[in-house]
Amino acid sequence: MTLLVFGHKNPDTDSICSSISFAHLKKALGEDAVPYALGEIRKEAKYALDYFKVDAPKILNNVKIQVKDLSYDKSLPLTPHSSILEAYDIMNDSSVKTIPIISEGGEFIGLATMQEIAKSLLHQHFNTVHTSVTNICNNLNGSVLVNCSEEIKGRVVTLSFGMDNVMDVLLEGDIAIVGDRYDVIEYAIDTKVKLVILTGKTKVSEDLLALAKQNKVSIISVDCDTYKASNLINQCTFLSNIILTDNLVTFNESDYADDVKETMLSTNFRAYPVVDDNNKFLGLVSRRHLLNPTKKNVVLVDHNEYAQSADGIEQANIVEVVDHHKIGGISTDVPMSFRVMPVGCTCTIVYQMYKENNVEVPYEIAGLLLSAILSDTLLFKSPTTTNMDKLACEELSKIAKVDMESYAMEMFKTGTSLDEFSIEQIVNMDFKEFNMSGKRVGIGQVFTLDIDSIFAKKDEFLSYINSTDYDMLVLAITDIIKEGSYLIYNADDKVISEAFNVEASQGVFAEGVVSRKKQLVPNLTTSVKNM
Image (cartoon, rainbow, N blue to C red):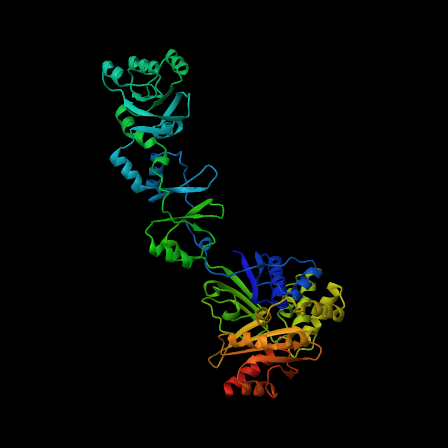
C-alpha cells in the first residue's frame, strides 16, 4: 500500500522539503511513497523547489476513509442487451440480489434486481419478446442455422396446435416455437416470421434453410422441448425491460465513508453502485463493507500532533513519525516507528537517515534538505541550531553546489515578502495550535525583512486576532537581521511580560526570540501555567 508522506498544516519549508526527501528515501528503500502538502506552498519553499527544479507535491485535503479504501465488491456488470435469465443465473450462483447494468462504454445505467426478475416471471407479461439470437442460443443451449438479423423483436407463438389454427394465428414478424412438424415449419417460413425456434434438436433440409434465407427468416435449433422453450423464451428478453433507473443512489470512489454511512442509514438498498468521475462503473458497496475499512498508511514529518496534522488523521494508520518538536498527543493502536530528535530541523534527521541506510543523496534532494535546515535555523541564528544541523549543511552544500550564506539570504528575501497576502493569510501562514493548561492557544509566526509593512497595518492585525475564538493568540513577526520578534497578541499583558521579560504592549520587540519551538511555546506555556 502507498505511504502518504506529509508535514503539518500551513506547511513551511521544512514540511515541504522533508516530505519530498523522506518519500524519496522510502522509494529508494523499496517502498511506494508519495509526498503531499497540507496547504498552499509558500514563496520560500517554492524558491527552493524552483532553484533545484523539483516538482511541488500535490495538496492533500484530508486522510479520511473513502469509498476507494473499502473492499467493496468488484461485481461483474451486464449490459442492457444481456438476458434476464443470464442475470438470474449470476445472482443465483453468486448469492446476490442485485446486478449493475452498464453501457457498452462502461458507464453505469441502472440495476437489475431479483425482485424485478421475480415480478417478470410471476406475471409473464412479455407478449412481445425483444432479445437477440445470441441470447436465445446461450439461454436455451441452441445453435444458429440461419441468422438474418441478430436483434429479434416479435410476438411469441407456440405452434403446438393443428395447421388450420396455425394459419389463423401466425403472422409475419412473429417468433415461432415448433418441434419436428415440417409442414408447420415451412408455413412459418412462407409467412415470413422473424424467427423460428426448432425444439428437440430438430433438423431441417437445405431447401428449407435456403427458403428461410430468401424470406429473411432466422432459424435456431435448441436442445429443450417445446414446453420448456415456451416457458424460457420470456427470460431471454433484454434486461433493458426491467432495469431500475429512478431514485438510485450512487457513490464516487472519492466519497467519504462517514457520508456513505449516513446516506445508507436514510435509504433502503441492499447495495449501492460505485462510479468514477466519468460515471464508469467500478463495483457495489454495502453496509458490511463499512465494518472493516482499509485505513490509509501515513508518515508524519515535522509534526506529531493531531491539531497540526491532516483532517481525518484519526482514521488513518500512522506508520512512522520523523520530527524535531516536542511530543504531542498522537497515539496509535499498533506499534510504529517514532523518530524525534532535538535538532533545528526535521531535514537534519532525514539526512541522517539517508546516511544510516547508505542511500546516496542526489543533487536536488541535497538542495531541498539544505534549504529546509537553513530556513528552520535562520542560517544558524536560531537557538534551536545544533552542531548536527551545521555539519549537515556543510556536507549538503557541497552536494548541492551552493554558497550557504548567499543562497540563504536570497531564499529569505524571496520568502519574506508579504505584500500579496491578506491579514488573515499572514496570521495563518505558519500557524499552530496548542493546549496550555486547558487553554486553546494559537501561535503564528512570520519571518520578514520588511517589518514596516506589518506595523502599517497593526490595527488590522489586532482586529483579526481579536475576532478569533482562541483563548489566546500570539503573532510573532520575526526579524532575521535583528534576531528577535515583534509580538501582536490577544492575551493578558501579564502573560506576555512574564513569558518574554518585556513591558507588554502591542508590537513589543522580544529580543533573541526567534524560535517558536524553543522560545515562544515553552515560555508561554510556563507563563500561562503561572497565571
